[in-house]
Length: 414
Image (cartoon, rainbow, N blue to C red; front, side, top):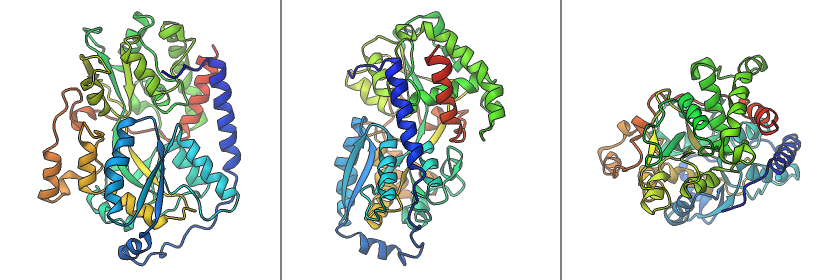
């Protein structure tokens, strides 16, 4: 297992990364490509021939890596496009590369697609780093729900055709039923359970993606529910709601794994603690991966999904296309293939990647719908309809750095 970061080291690295990102966002992006650059989809297919597309994505998910390399890349190759996966430990690494190349005036950027999250999408959009208006050309977009709110906004930032949907996600907690006979049913109950069982619970340290979303779930809980936290960020709302959050998490910290002196750096490290039976709960935004981890013996055989009465946050994952990509047509082909019914169904198979589709299944042809109806049920993870019951949407991206910084100041440095 990767050594867990100590608090001072974590703080220093986080501040340095944030400073770099802020400095780079001041760069001047080239003018956005003309929306009529490609007359139609046939023109895109023609221009894509022979192009190599570099997809920058989080490299810590073995199933995700295998899906892209072994399933998506061969499918894309049928269109004359070579897909190369570039693994990163943080999406900001990809965005920093885009900003650096834009600052240098490069119009032949090395980043062609990014598996992007909401906070980095907002940052890139504000800096003019994303190509926009291109997703409407993708034939596969016709199979998505035009009114699906998860596809219209990414952490409160309007999508505006600047990124293509890839799959849906639901924040999920899981527990070892062998160790927890009577699991809590609310997030407040989870925090109470953790306080009553010292050393058996922890969460990744923000700004890790999973750690950040856990803090936002805790904010909703201490505020009286997700509907009590305004989606749009304001300093007044933060000042009003966050003190109760820091009090709750600060009081909980001494009862966490290793007394809260050390936090897992990311979901992978938390998962390793769960696999080693050092903690009795884990958490993920990709619950479908639980199926394989139990099947191969990595996770306890009695791993169960913790379905909370107050629901959890759900969102969609997207693929962003940098404005200076030198393989824009090829990137559009990759995004379109990734959004096809065949790829969405294949990716949903638990032993492939198990990600939830973004398509409107009711709008599919009978042949395409049959692909999803034939998917095997997971013995660990409930169906998406059950998993997303009482789900709430993401807060605006501006909440993320504010809460990450607040956690660092009020909990980590206690």
